[in-house]
Image (cartoon, rainbow, N blue to C red; front, side, top):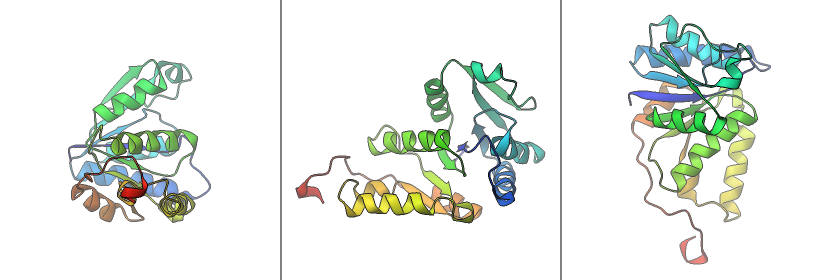
Length: 193
């Protein structure tokens, strides 16, 4: 993997460990010569992951909609800042620039980006590994929901397994490097469950 897109909050959240792990993830990507692609902001966990990579002389590419640039949240020290018009263009560009995706703690925007990538993977539009760094169990309830979708036969187990999960950065990166996309179609029928 040459580049990983990170989705995460533009706030810090309630746990200082969210920030600590964001910084550490940025550092680990830089140390492994993996480009960081992210939302381009200097605020919250977004700024922390970028700072972590930049502090280790990593390559950091930000993708930011123009309307957020006008709110003065752009990180000024990035290797490259790409401006786009819309949030959809942002997701598309971030997908184009990466070989895999990791979600850190975040809110609606993070979930939107994560589920868009999962949906595209499920539909076979890409074969990239998608991971969650489950800091302090932040995503435990979401993981339980996904397992419930499988139990209720609304999501195939193979598609549930598109999402790699770990609470350890090195373990998650290892899982992503060894990821093989499933050869399963999206549709669920009684014959296929």
